[in-house]
Length: 482
Figure 1 (cartoon, rainbow, N blue to C red):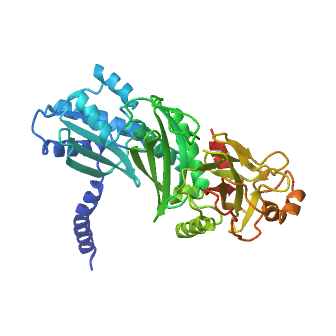
Figure 2 (cartoon, rainbow, N blue to C red; figure 1 turned 120 degrees about the vertical axis):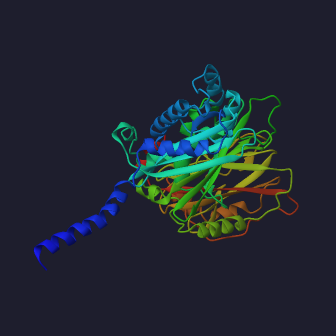
């Protein structure tokens, strides 16, 4: 092949390949191009002069989303197709105060609709600029205000980052991303309230169980922190009373929740419930990648549980260990001295008790290996009488219940009777020596084998139970305990 022919073939090959290179170079879009496409899409969905307000959808980079919103609003105003409602109108300050939301931050659909109505809009345009690998994606959604029906939804991807706005995006750590998602959920629950509420943080457990974990403590601490910083909530200790709430009392509610592992995600469901009538005020769903929790690291399951199914099997064992008739109006409640129902190595466990009538009680411990023993009364702490609506905390002086390995899920069962139990001495005599040898430093002892609960014939006997989880010391969680 001569030289001139080689040159001609090379030129032909380059000409054939040029369209491919050209296509690739045009594969990415500028933010302005993505905005123009989004606005064109919106104009095809609505008649001219439709009154619209532009708000932010959820995003891990709210500053970047706010920048995109300002650019979209500018295009909408300059084109003149929509009548854009000004978000900085005088009325917006009042609306923002009522809803306790910043308009550059995330608002849910219910809140967006309420804001739109008060501003006199016909359409809500929600926008988010979010990361998508090495590029970005512009998500736009439009809702008709009158019907609350979705009128259009468009995602424009492959947007290349530009210095003018990409620098606003903070490279958040996994812990920061998770924290922001929980914060958004707490704020969304607060937005459902018409008036401020006294709030307590309830149990946060693995779904379909009463099992807390290290993740429960993380959730509790994070929810509590963001609730304290939300003006709609005044965080208080949980109400521990068996009496009905007084009429006209300040509204009180509880945020509790469950979590489950579904594939590569941990799905958290948070619920806000009114204490007075047990009516749900709202719920929020939070998705957290399992990989992000591992990077922190925080365990979703207790140390002695390997799968969700195994946790449910443990729950069945704990529930069936003591089964008594609880249909009587006679009630007893018990809870630990940790609001998250978790304890670090070396911490002391104390058990709080309250009953709606005078009674006698005894307390059983089920350890991480499923073994059971009675821990109260014992050879040193013998007084097991409980007075009506008078809270009592055990153990009494002379014994401490101290957390130590092995770590994992434990259970406490309290049995109460209107008559004194028979043969108590025989029941705790079996652990008397162990108790005396460990005064001031026991973790409830480790099990002596399952045995039946003996009750007096004819006595009214009820029981209650709670699980707690023991954890090794965690610098991550301790640093988050505000």
